[in-house]
Image (cartoon, rainbow, N blue to C red; front, side, top):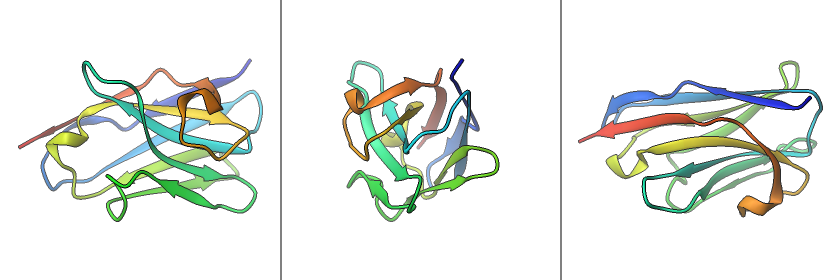
Length: 120
């Protein structure tokens, strides 16, 4: 059974940092990524990493502030978020799939989400 378990969310102030983690079990994937969904909005792409060559992909809104990385031994992916802004407030979801893409439908498995709240 495939499971993705996120952790690391919380309440921080603008300018602070957070590190999200996502541990996968049940199988390995070609790509893992992070998406986020704010209240009343659609789920949007944040970042993704391709497993075999570590190629990364970022949304323009987070480039230079967020970094995605992976740990082969733990079958885990991380999202280091620096210089957080109030507009980064959302539920962050980990997705896993087989293509390095930016759309929700390109990922086959999802975690339960972790809340990130950035106060001004």
